[in-house]
Length: 501
Image (cartoon, rainbow, N blue to C red; front, side, top):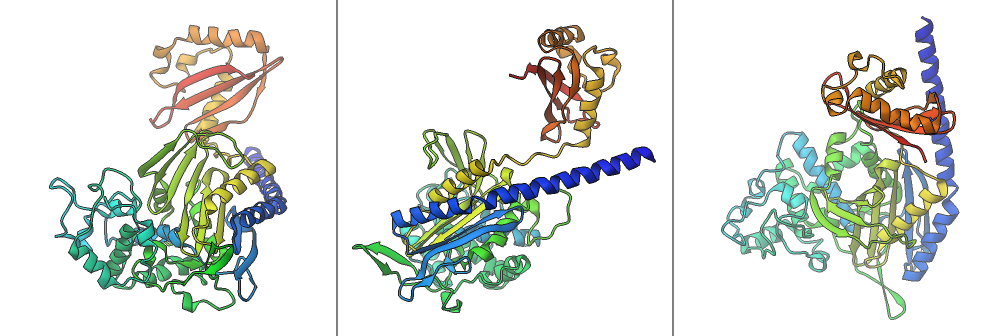
């Protein structure tokens, strides 16, 4: 009973500590708001933005948000987190999620040929005789072989279904065969919208509204600009001849699936929070429109895009960056291992971007109403600044029971290694790889520099089966790294010691 009570008290103490740490983290991020506002203000002024709105999503909530300038210049209407901006290609991941919702219903598979759902594709001429059929996955990952089509695609929003079918029937000009390389295609996502409509039996807008937006509580995200309250609709502008000239808003249509959504920071933050909720993987009840594993699948780097060996953060810090494309999402990883997932958006009159850093539990959104406003640069600068000012670190990986158990068993075994071969905690490769005598000699050499072991720290996990801890000595410390085998129960297959410098 005493052991159980002690364990419960320890758990309560851990939860209390975690809640306190979380509050401190949120307070530190909130404190960066003046700096965030200045960064956006300076960027907007330099790049002639009429207005913008921004938000930071942290631990499942819109923690910090704001707006600057005007959503409509003629009436001097202030831009706010409630202003409705057209978010252009940020719409693509929502369309991708609609496809995964249909898969969840058992109505399609990602590696199915797209012609099963758009029959007109069946007889469309291919680039070469050995070209494979275009699959849904090809469309999701910009691998269908269509040419990059941003200038053309941006003027297609109000195109109707019959026009898309006519384009297919006439034959599409390919730049590559499907399945060999990345090339950004708005046309591909228009096709995905058509697949959603054909499979669901509803306009894709209605299906997404019902299956994604409603469960997430996104009540103010729309497709057609005429449905927006006049005081909330952001008008789009281009900066030309030293003045803002209003861009004509396009109506909703078939190509809305690639870039037609109109939403606010307040509303879209709920979608961003859902993407963050997929991390870390857990056994919690599912509460979203698709499974959390579906969301993680969307976010994976399915199609390599580029390696920028000379990439520099907006602060000037050099850090190589590799990037790829998931399902309607861009993925990147920098030289420090920081992973970013999200998407930009650009149309005549608008520019936007959202991005999450899963390891940090933080996401950012920004909308502006100037043609092709480059929001990725400023969002990256803001995230980088917030991380530095708030002293944010990657969220710790929870230590699994087996890692903790093996660590405790190691601490009891070291430094003598007595009966190590009979302990039952090492995998069959461990001692054949290196004998007890050699391992003892290695550790003794380190102990000669650090002094006798006086205690140890808690584990720091890399994942469920790998991690490190520190052996404290009288005059120095030793880092202990070990990794466990795939068998059940998992056993120690590798063990390394090094001095803590």
